[in-house]
Figure 1 (cartoon, each protein chain N blue to C red):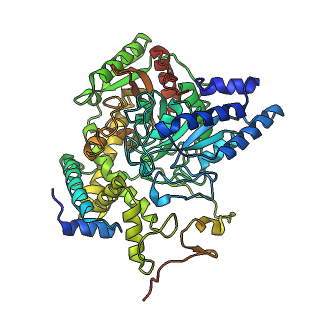
Figure 2: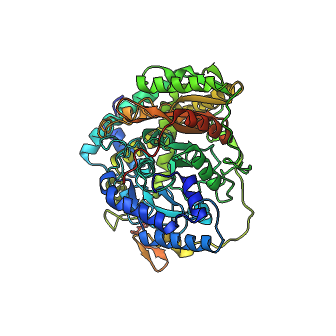
Amino acid sequence: MLKKNLCDTSRELSDGRISSQELTKKCLENIARHDNELGAMLWLNEKNSLNQACASDKRRKNGQSLGPLDGVPIAIKDMILSTDFPSTAASKILEGYVSPYDASVVSRLRAAGAVIIGKTNQDEFAMGSSNESSAYKLCRNPWNLQHTPGGSSGGSAAALSAGMCFGSLGTDTGGSIRQPAAYTGLVGMKPSYGRVSRFGIIAFASSLDQVGPFARSVRDCALLLKLIAGFDDKDSTSVNIPVPDYVGCLNLDVMGKKIGVPREYFGDGISPAVKLSIEHTIAKLKDGGAEIVPILLPHTKYAVATYYIIATAEASSNLSRYDGVRYGPRRGDAKDLLSLYESTRGELFGTEVKRRIMLGTYVLSAGYYDAYYLKAQKVRRLFADDFAQAFKHVDVIISPTTPSTAFRIGEKIDDPLAMYLNDIYTISANLAGICAISVPSGLDDQGLPIGVQLMGKAFDEQTLFNVAAAIERDSHFDSSRAIMS
Amino acid sequence: MAFSTLELQKIARLARLSLSDDEFIRLGEDLGRIVDFVDQLAEVDVNGIEPMSHAGDRSLLFRDDRARPGLGCRAIESSAGYEDGLIRVPKIVE
């Protein structure tokens, strides 16, 4: 039952072959059995999830189904506010915090009848690429428990890959959906900036953050994006343009599609297995009639530096709200406000968060603002210009999602720069605000999944789904192989 | 580049972070390496380039200026200092 993808499960619910209560119980049993070892889930509310499932079964029985997601268990990242679970961003500074309102994406899931099965583990405030900076517990990769699931949305990826839900939501500021999707054999999409509401998402870097889906198939991913995407007047950066019927418009024919291959993404640092798999994928697309076009994205080598200035600057501002006054626990001398601020933040933020707040504060401080922050904002425009130029000639751009497959737990945690460089291929899409997807393309010689990234023009997610679906068909990848049961 | 203790203390004070001596040493080393790395942007020519603060640079949308129901005190109930619809904080005026 847990091995089925979302669309098939939805069909079985609709046909009455299974009930939402059965599905929800199965997911919760799987969590109870395996999550001590896996560490994918942070917060559960079994009674509430089962009540949602019961309500869904009643709706279906009365012919009042809310649609394909009605009764399907979905997990959400802890960055996403929900009234029936704590929302901590995997940080001690928000320990015990329960939001008085739902994020807009959660309201949409509820309106579609989804059963929210739990909140997933992540890097603290989404700052990390391995899930190792969670303040609560380690999360492991179900494909090999000695390896990380990636990050920062590692828990959403691990939970889905291990069969604890049928779809999940993450957030992606520099690759935090696509990289864990690649590491765990899933499809993961970062939508165009403004496509999905950020209302009720704990902010990390507001000009880069987007919510997006993880799924076990491209079709599932398209279905989930359709449900969460669209204008929201509670988010002033939300864009008011129509959302296509991604599933209905899926077209696997790549004949005549122009696929750009950026030279800069295939240089030093890419593992031979990843390179071979992407080349194989490109060859298959060519066999299908796609035109392969070499392109240049000349500023790629500056992506990580640009990102770590802009993202940390925005984070240092966004995280200033956690001061021991409005949210979460307090530390320090109750008689002195400054001590309250400094002790609460010093004791309750983790190392990586403090490192980034310090860097962000430095690049915004008097005397350094122009040299770092303003400079990075100008370089950021060059990234957008690079993509605009490339998309005059191609429909999508193909690249590896990550330079290697999932690395081992502990391998990079003491070297922040090595960890940051892991995001080299994913960051540019966030800087430019375009959409990007990771789709599995094969396994390396250790049996770990490899992901292909497709980047598309802003708001052209449909073309990404179409080409990704063709890659999925040709790769014969089995996303259910790591399901724990 | 190497950060002096004084510089690190200044940044930590601006960021409202109390750090231990060990953290100052470690963060100082990390920040030095990271700043050396991001210094590569100095070689990029950005003459005449407008800074980009948001993707697409679309103008922000505004809602109609109409009253809507709000959260009221529920918005602050999770504060550790919550008392009767207010948040208790240390004295801020001498």
